[in-house]
Image (cartoon, rainbow, N blue to C red; front, side, top):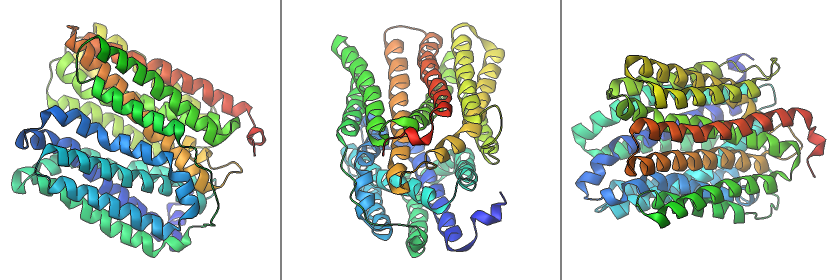
Length: 446
């Protein structure tokens, strides 16, 4: 698939504007994670640090629960306009925040805007590009994240040091605004027809509530905090499955979505723990921690640039198997490793996880649009599967590490136990990926 084909004509300009918006959003998200400790220190708000960090994803999950009926009723230009206004309002709340509570509120509002545009973007890709083109387009999204992943933290740190953390929050929003204006100008390229999609948001609301309860419970010690955390983890996982099953109406689409969600969860769970493993468990510095994170992201980017839909063995299944192997290697290394050899093993395992993500992600996401369902209905389901599963596993792995560390476990044992959670999640993805190969699209209920 020549790259010039997907950038041809009006839809090509729209794709470029979406990639530019993704780049700006990536830089903005990395600005938050990079300078938020500085913000919490200046505003005396470390008590709300964890909640602020998780608030955007939780709000996005909540918004995605309602996205399908909204996208079915609202024209693309209106969706872009409202999502942009909400996003900018959230950024403004954080930029001009007098206290940490205002930063938290800004993250919530920003997350709502991102949830709306994420569902819309997935639907637009499904409607604009056919089955041959779509994997290549989704591979470009991974490539767009390469520069923010490598240069974003350092650049935002320099901006924060030079002119203050508020500008580090603000400057990427101008890039997002320019990209969204261009998106609106070419939104007519998207095939759209007004329909009436029923609201099926109960399970999604349960997931968002479970994530919020789990994030709050992980910040405190005590018996009831542990109980709430476990219940939130179980409730969130069950809610994700229920939402996807109800939205997909069973059949092959459900298998595709669940395997895709397991893939995203596996990578996110591993990625969330790499830095703390290198620094805390093996006593190294930020440099080697960044090398491990970069290894995962670079392998994802490079492997995703040339997707192979018809390759054998099936690349989605292979990618999930690699995720299982990477998680197992990290479990063993965390419990038994030490010194430079352990750090090297972590970096290699991170690269394997990135390779699995790269070869499977664009294919698994693209495959969801190959069935008979309209792209505007499937898009929010795909985005929900990705966003909710990543937020859910990050809550579990991060919370489990914090809890075990607080109860006196060494950092290596705490990290190993957290990585162990990723193994069955990715293994479920392997099973569902194999199942999707056996179930025809006709098995999905109309």
